Amino acid sequence: METAEINIETRWNIDPSHSDVSFKIKHLMITNVKGTFKQFGASLNATNENFTNSQIDFWINPSSIDTGDDKRDMHLKSKEFFDVENYRQITFSGKLSEKMNNMKNFDLTGELTIKNISQEVKLSVEYLGAIKDLEGNDKIGFLVYGKINRKDFGLAWNTAIETVGGMLLGDDVLINCEVQLIKQI
Image (cartoon, rainbow, N blue to C red):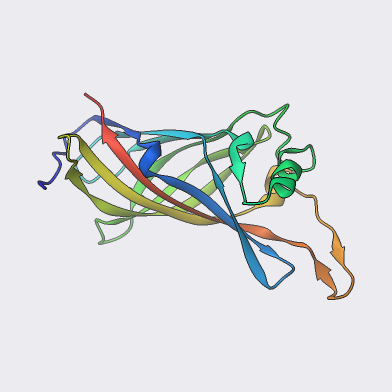
C-alpha cells in the first residue's frame, strides 16, 4: 500500500466502521467497566501537513451507549446519567497543538459539552500514520485518550458501598478513541 497524500487545508471525516469510541470507569473501587458508543461522527480540518492547529469537531449519540449489560445501559440513558430523552448529543470542538519536539504526539484542547454543561478539556493524541486503503481512499489514524471527571458534567449519581467503605463508581472517566479518518474530495 502506498502512503496517503496530505495537503494543506484538507477536510477529513471519521470512518465509523473503522473507529472505536470507548471509555472506562472504576467500579467497586477495584476494576474498570468498559463502555462504547456506537453512533458518532467527527471531522478534522487540517491547516498544514503536520496537523497542528487543525480544528476537530466531534459528536456522540449518548443513547448508543453499550456496556455489554442492557440493565446498566438503560440506567446510563436515564435522568441519573445522560438523560437521553432531553440531551441527544455529546459534542466536542477543539484544536490540535503539537507537543514539543514530537511530530506524532499532540495535545487536543477544546470544549466538551454533556447535558448542556460545557467544560474545557485537554486530551492527548497520537498520530498513527497515513495510507491509501484498498479502494484508493486517503486515510489517517489517531489514538485519542485522556481523563475527565464525570461530576463536572452533571453525571453525579453514585451510591455508597458500606461493606468496603467506598463508592460504587469512581469519578474519573478514562477516554480511549481509535479513529480512522477519510480524506474528503
